[in-house]
Image 1 (cartoon, one colour):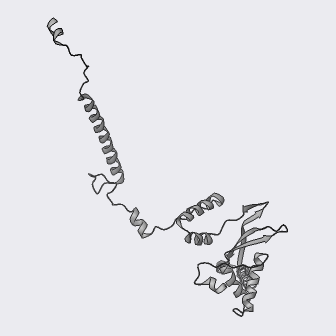
Image 2 (image 1 turned 30 degrees about the horizontal axis):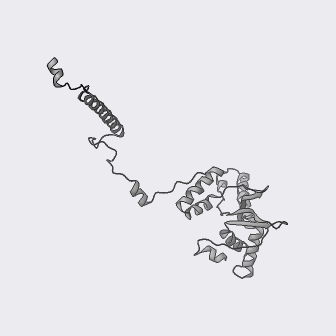
Image 3 (image 1 turned 45 degrees about the vertical axis):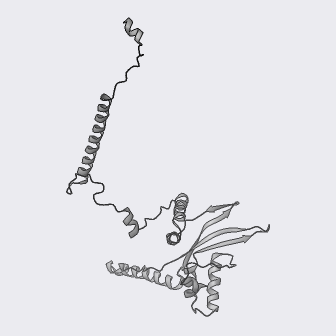
Length: 246
């Protein structure tokens, strides 16, 4: 199971009956040692924590209710070079010894009691409701977003920002998206704009053209009102007798 989760698989689901997360890691490590895959406990444990992203722990109470008690995230601790060369800057022998023992302390800590992973609860069931406790790590957020559809990514980003204030990362623009968003260089330039004009000059020219267009429209509306035919009143037609009397 550990080997299949490391390569050639998008994700791996399996069940276990460990009561706590450290017990889960220990049980899987011991199983790998018994199978003869590894001989060193620390090496086997390193392989285990590399594939344990989340642990969904279910419980069954005395009433027979089965529910998710917590969701725990496993965060492998990367080994970093924490040694320094500060002893070279010390002028006294005592200072050099102090810096040397600082490096020696780091070395023995890594050799005897190096922390391989950290774990923290993301979600907990408390008082008949689910409570968000800790945010998801950046690495798992990135991997989760990479395996979501666009609509799910939008909802997931809103969830992160609403609950933990995590802003969505700025994703690089692909060549296809850049081709869609790219406009011609002269798309926003006026027709009579010179190539050597600055952005400020182009903006002023556009405003001037817009003002001239408004004046032209107002003048056309005014001339149209003057040239419109006047409405004449309807006069009754007189008959021949009325014409003779006149």
